[in-house]
Each structure stands twice: as structure tokens, then as C-alpha cells.
Image (cartoon, rainbow, N blue to C red; front, side, top):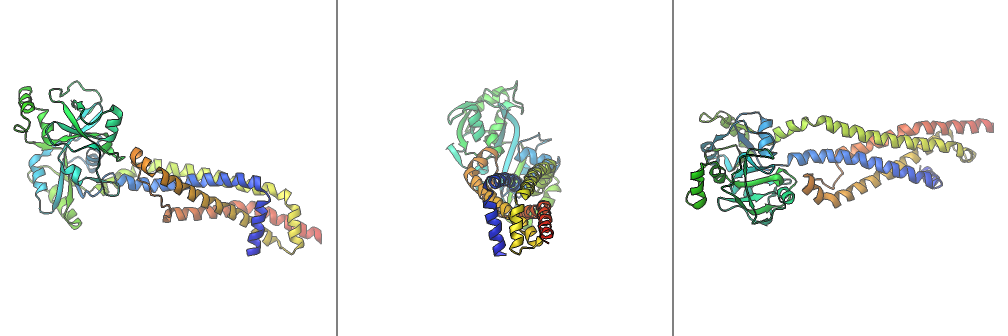
Length: 413
């Protein structure tokens, strides 16, 4: 077998130009196939890690997907709010470690405004349980201070100290601006690649303050520390529990809470349901990658077939040296497997280097937290499939070589 491998290797070297072009074609197609599969798997994990460490999301009953979309992804609109007392009940519950209130409904030049408290910057995690950091400035401390995401700062060219005006509603254009109470930007959150980057964060009392009557608002603006309003409602609450084992118990208790209409959902379950809606696009990408690979494998088969006429003399020499038709068939298959194996190695190396180099950029720009470790069971099984497909497409040129070997044998007789 070692001799046959050596012969197959030197046979490939004797046809450098066509072999190199076929090698490049195979490497590119295999890299595309592995990239799509790896990105698909990692994107699913990254999608699920938009929010990390939150055990339950609580809001008004509206369906778990809708609750997930407007609390985590800032998409859609809440059907109703829940009482602030309900948030306080959840915050003080013995099973709850921390609670983050969320209040939505306003915007700034097309970007969502979210009311919350300082617990948001302390407990909210994303990616691999990464905490929020500040590119510049700090969290809000006074009533009319705001913290903006990286995309907001970049798109609107904002800096710490700039003043912004919040508008009522979530449209990019609003005719109701809360210009009597402008906010001062106190901090810019470092890029996360999540909806946080496109959000303006203010305090819960500030959300209530800007919706006061003109007279009451003027008094609050004049004395914000003394007349800071108490929130009356929130859109949703994110909960972290003392024990994961208590998740279902607390979820059932919240859903049956008698003093307010509440619904608690598990973020992971809601994320999985949302991801299934993208299955069509996911499968389409896999089909396209597979077609690219098939075209390259057909190119490999074509190269081997085209070389058969040129290799009749070579096959005749092998027959004179005692090689049987089966040996000639195995030689062709080995040539194809060597070429594809080298292409797989080059594709995996190129993909790993690309992921290492682009890891930070992909995370900040697209929210894709892609690991450079591509040796997953799924990708290894994919390479096995590629090798099996190589054997299949190499059968035709292999049979042609086998037929030529038989012809040489019969002619010799």
C-alpha cells in the first residue's frame, strides 16, 4: 500500500498544472461548505447568546416569541405593561437573585429607548457571559442622563456630554418630542454585536418624568433629585435565580400570580422556537454550499477522465511491472483521495486562520461569536461525507483506467 501511495503521489506531481488548479477549486469549495456549516452552528449559539445568564423573562401575556422579541431584540411592540408593584414582588422574591426592569415605548431618531436601572449594567450578560463595558463614560447617575449603544454613537456621531431629545413612539419620525427635558449622554457602551448597540438607555424614573404634564415636568427638571417620579409600570422584567432548579416552579407561580396578569418564559426555549422560523434560509445556504462542492468534485472527475488518454502508456508500464486492473483502479481512487484530503486540510487551516483574524470584527459588527475551533463532530462528519463523495465521483475515471488496463492485458496476449 505504501508503494501504491508513493506512486499515486508522484503521478499527481507529474501533472502539476491541472492538479494545482483542481486543488484550488476543491479547497475553495470545501472551505465554503465548512464555513457555511460552521457559521450555521456558531450563529445559532451566538443567536442564543444574545442574552446570557437570564433564567426568566416576565411580561404581560402576549406569547413567548413576542415577549422575547421586544424585550431582548427591541422588535415589535408590547401589548401591555405590568404594574411596578409586580416588579417589586419579583425583585424581592426569595428565589430571585436579581431582577432587571425594562420599560419601552419611546425612541430617538429611529433607535429604541429603554428605561431600566443600574442593575442592568451589573447583571446583564451577552455572548459567553460577557459583562457590559463602557467605551467611554459611565452609567447614568442622575435623572436626565442617558447611556447609548455603540451603533447609536457611530451612526449619529455622538460623544459623552452631548444632549439628545427623546421622542414618543418607536418610529424614525415623531411629532411628539420630549424637548422640555433633554438628556445628557453619560456613557457609550462598548460594541457587543447585539441589540444593545442600537439602544438608548435611561433610568426608569426618567421614562415616567418625560410623560408628565408640562407643568409637572418643569418642576422635575428644576429639582430632579427631589421630585424624581416613582415608576408606575414596566414593560418587562429579566430575572436571575438563586438556583436553576427553581426555574419551573417560579415560572408556574408567576403565570398564576393573582394580582396582575403576568407571563414568564424561558429565554432558551423562546430562542429555539424563533430559530426554527429561520430553518428555510439555513437549509438554502447548505444546499448552495453542497452544490459548490458537487461542481468541484465533478471537475475532479473530469480531470481524471481527461488524463486517461494521456496515461495509456503509463498504465501499460504498470501492467508490464505486474500491476493488475484492480491495482490500477485503486491507484486512481488514491490519487483523488490524496488530492481531496490535502484540500480538506488546506480548507480547515484557511478557515481557522480566517476565524482567528476576524473574530473581534465579526463579534462587534454582526454579533457573531464564532469559535476558531472547527473540530466539531458536525464538521468532522462533513469531511467524511466529502471523502465518501470523492470515492463516488472517482469511480467513473477509475473504471476507465480499469478498462484500459484490461485492454492492455488482452492486447499483450
